[in-house]
Amino acid sequence: MREAMARAEVGDDCWGDDPTVIALQDRMAELLGKEAAVFVPSGTMANQLAVGLHVRPGEAIAAHPGAHVQVHEDASAARLSGAQIMPIGTRGGYDVAALETLIHQEECGWPRVGLVWVENTIGDAAGAVWPVHDHAEAQAVSGLESIARATRAHGRALHLDGARLWNAVTASGTSLERYASLADTVSCAFSKGLGAPAGSILAGSSETIARARAHRHALGGSMRQAGILAAACSYALEHHRERLAQDHERARLLAERLAEHDGWSVQTPQTNMVIAHLHGASAPALCERFAEHGILCSPNRYDELRFVLHLGIDDEAVDAVTRAAVQILA
Ligand SMILES: *Cc1c(COP(=O)(O)O)cnc(C)c1O
Image 1 (tube, protein in one colour):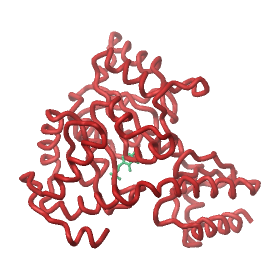
Image 2 (cartoon, rainbow, N blue to C red):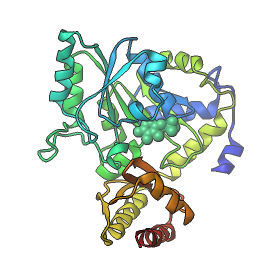
Image 3 (spheres, helix red, strand yellow):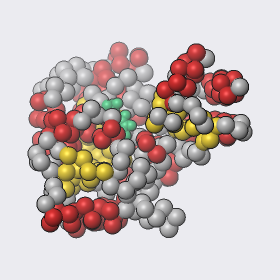
C-alpha cells in the first residue's frame, strides 16, 4: 500500500484533475451502481455531506438510536446543517411502522423528516447486518427494501451510512450495488476494515454529487494531491476485501472463547466485532486492564466492551486477547 501511494500519479483534486482520485471515484460509482462519487477525507465528512444535501435547517433525520451520526459525530448534523436527529426503533434498527409514525407526527407540529437514515453494518449493534428483506424473527426491524419503499412513498430521501458496507456484503452475499440501489446517497469507508490510512466515498446521482463537491470544499475537505490517499484506498479495495471473511471468522472464534468462561457474556458476532460484558465491571476500566496486556479495545457502552477485528489482528493476537481475558477475570 505504501508503495502504491508513493507511485501514485497525482493532480490537484481541488480542480478535480487528480487522475488517481478520479479512478477511485469512477470505480466506486461503478461498484455502487451510482452515476457519480466524491472522495472525502473521512466517513464523518461523507455523512455530513449527505446531511447537508438532503436536509434543510429545522428538519429532522430519522435514525436508529446509537447511529454513528447521532452519537459519534459531535452533533455535526445540528452544528453544520441545523438538523435534529430523531431516534426511532432500537439500537438494532427500526421498522416501517416506527418511521411512518414519526412522519405522521409532522401533522402534530413535529419537525419534518427531511432524511431517513440507515447504517450497515450497524456499529452499535455489534456490527449486525441490516438485511435487505423483511425477516419474521426480526420483528421490530424492517428490511431495507421496505424502508426504502416507504421512504419513497412519502417523498423523502434515504442515506445509507455504509462505512462498513463491505462487511455486510461479505456476511450476507448481497452486492454493494443492491444495497446502494435502495438509497439516494451511500457512503463507504476505506479506513476501517479495509485498512487504508484515510478516505471515504459518497456516491449518488451526478447532480447530487456535484453539489456535494461544493459542500466538501466549504467544509475544508478538498485536498490537492489527494491521489496519494486515493491510491491507498484503491489498493485496499483491490487487495483487502476478500480477507474480511477472516476477520468475521476470528470474531466468532474470539466470542466463543470468551463465552467459555463464566463471567463474560458475549453476543454471537455476525461480522467483525465482538461485544462483551463482564458482570460488575465498567467497560472503560476493563479497557485499561486490557491495555496493560497490550490489547487495545474500546468501551461501546458503559457496560460493554468492543473488540474490533481487522487486518492488523492475526490468530496469535486472538490468542493473546483470550489469555488476557482469563487473567482479568481471575
Ligand atoms: C467510523 C464510522 C463513520 C465515520 O468514519 P470516520 O472516517 O471515522 O470519520 C461513520 N459511520 C460509521 C457507521 C462508522 O463506523
